Image (cartoon, rainbow, N blue to C red; front, top):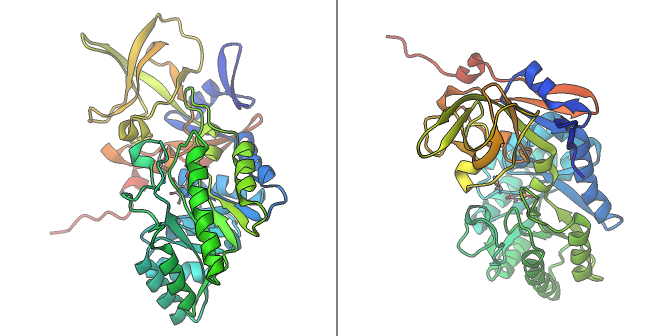
Length: 415
Ligand SMILES: Cc1ncc(COP(=O)(O)O)c(C=O)c1O
Ligand SMILES: N[C@@H](CCCC[NH3+])C(=O)O
């Protein structure tokens, strides 16, 4: 079910007309639906049901503290990848005991902070990281709960840049080396082995790669158990895809049932780290047509949102639907929607049949995940305002950046 629907040919977010939001708050603007965030999170929580475990929302997908707070109030845990994300979760009122810390480059300072607040566990991604974590924990006379992120070498069948579970990727510990690393972890007095983890990629639209990875992890869990190393939780990461165009990813419940079936009667708590499948279709990016520039080669529509607002098309050739907020009097033509940034790769959509006139508003759909969080100030463009719609209520959850925000911390050298 979408919370971005058409009523009398006008696009709404819940009960708010998006043109009204664009008029009042300006563009570019990210607009999120509270009901969509809630429903997408609850789909996971309900599918997990009574099975012990946690749904740890991947903060990187969309880290606005209002959204983290909303998820925390629903009982979510969080998957973080930096000290900054840790601070965000704590600021938003998230429970530190429901935080898992992933990422290949955790620093000693980040480890110390995470230990001090008592996170649930570290998803350790290398042997060197395990040694450093053990040292940091020992210095603080603390015990670090860990899960080893293993790289199961399966093809996630997604875009190569967002595939993470192949031998050639930088993520995780080679599954063939994992038994040795677990044995080493078991020797370390300040390390407490809790789990096993993998995350094989993002925007997966089929179950098979998840299930192949799970099969490999379960062999390892069983072998470790025979070796006297007990694993109490299994974290399958995130990665479930969404519909951007015509993809048909599995339902959360189907995915979860297939996993539970494979787990069988093993006593394993289940953890998940969904990002995109919670956030993507809970947000849109509103933009305005600035100029129409038909040329011999292409009809360019220059819009006021650019690759600095949403880099996904430039980075992964990602396709996101672009819709009109209201009917236009113009004739439908085929347009390339390009931003004001001075890069040829600065486009949000190509070859789109739209009826456009300058001043018309558009929505880049499915923009709630990896939209704002990957935005930048390139070309000294202020990052967009973020708005949360709740029924017919509108909340500004992040103000549009000002010039002063953008130069904060910069200093001119006198003399
Ligand atoms: C370790 C880890 N967990 C979770 C996620 C979230 O993935 P997704 O947004 O595809 O659910 C990612 C990003 O791909 C990740 O790297
Ligand atoms: N940022 C990517 C996904 C990478 C996921 C992070 N591990 C995207 O927009 O599709």
